[in-house]
Amino acid sequence: MAYFEVPKSLWMMNLGFGLIGIALQWMFLRSRPVFNKVNPNPIILISMLLLMLTFWDDGLQNVHRWLSIGNFKLNIGLIVSPLILIHIHRLENQINEILASLLVVIIFLFQPDASLVTAFYASAGILLFRKNISSTTKGLILISAIGASVLAWYRLDSLPPVNYVEGILTLALEISGFFAICSVLSLVLLPLPFFVLASKKNRTMAYSLGIYYSLILLATLFGNFPVMVMGYGISPIIGYFIGLVWLGESVSKL
Image 1: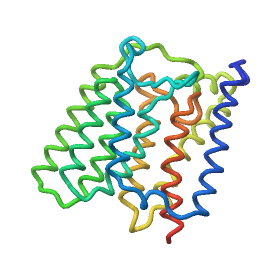
Image 2: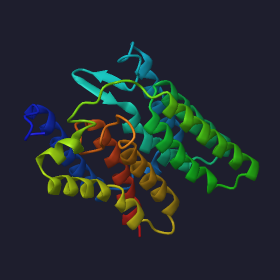
Image 3: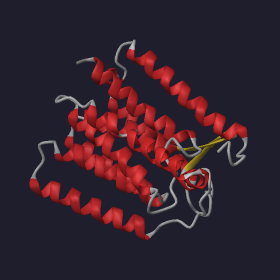
């Protein structure tokens, strides 16, 4: 971004929130666990209410992914999706787990956001399939996941890409092929902790988050979606560090 003279305030914001995320993760690792100490129900409810607030205004060309807070435009879905997945896994009522997953996917369908529909439902499906539910219920979940993903990708929005958000890898390639390869490899590293550091006890949740982040990254190959962490935008950074904080807490218990 600096090479192509993107305003300094934008790429410095990415860097700043990345450093804040690292500091917060270090702080949480040294303190008592956070995620297991809170009631998952209000967290899921508040997260869904925040998602609903994206429909408060007319959106951008009828796309409702952002919530304006002062000068910030936050993509709420990219922030709360990992949080919702973590707390869905903690719910004890199977019906509530399924309903919460379906409601979140429906919101993403109306935003619309194909990448989040696919990534969230695939990840939630992993969590639900590991529960003691009937084969019929599993079949219905699978059919609804495929149907929702097909519908979401059929109804892709027509928003033009921004070169330092969705097109950041193209900018890297314009600098040099070597720089582009390094950029791709750095993105591949992002979901790896959730697969490498997963233990037998936390494996299902860790794999679910790893697949979520992997699909968010892969979606950028097939549509105009933000390149997580590398492209401009603090929302994916916040969402990523939510997952890392949870992983750090679960690993520190080993």
